[in-house]
Image (tube, rainbow, N blue to C red):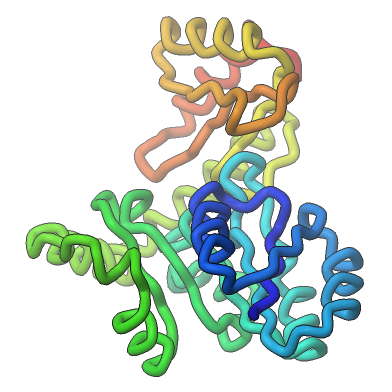
Length: 262
């Protein structure tokens, strides 16, 4: 039996994976409060199971906040758990070389398994697992979802390989994103820490009305409601990219000011 400790706001894909393991009677799940390291430390200290896994989004998709990577690395040394991160929103964006959130916080060596997607910044589809040789062999031989899925088509693999080259050599793209993050903060006064910007508006009606207004104004901004987020915490989710310009951000700020309060 393995004890799995999961952040309360982890992505649905992580939750579904844990549920599959639970059905096989292989794990006992502990959910710790979002980014609350005191609560996680308490749960780890009370757990008497030898095998422990801590899994978390590195950059949370709905709030745009980071997992406390440095604190998690310290807890890993203290409790000797397997540290797994989902770096779907950090890969190619965060870190000096685009290595993701672990590189951003200088704790790559503390992460045992890094799960990522090729459907975000890479512009492809599918995903990847970055891990040691021994973990790779185990997943290839025992990972049910991997074994019973179709191999990535060669053109997609080639496109993903090309995306890695772009991320490594065209560093101006990454710098542009972070400049946009700074500009958005300066224009709106909204404190933001990443290219994922969550604007909580409250009710589902308010979120949908704001989305329609923004679409009519030339901006495709997603409205997020239940079951993705709790009731009355519906939000607009803005994701900044390299192709946006300062003028785009100024126009977006003007449009936002006419449909939500900030």
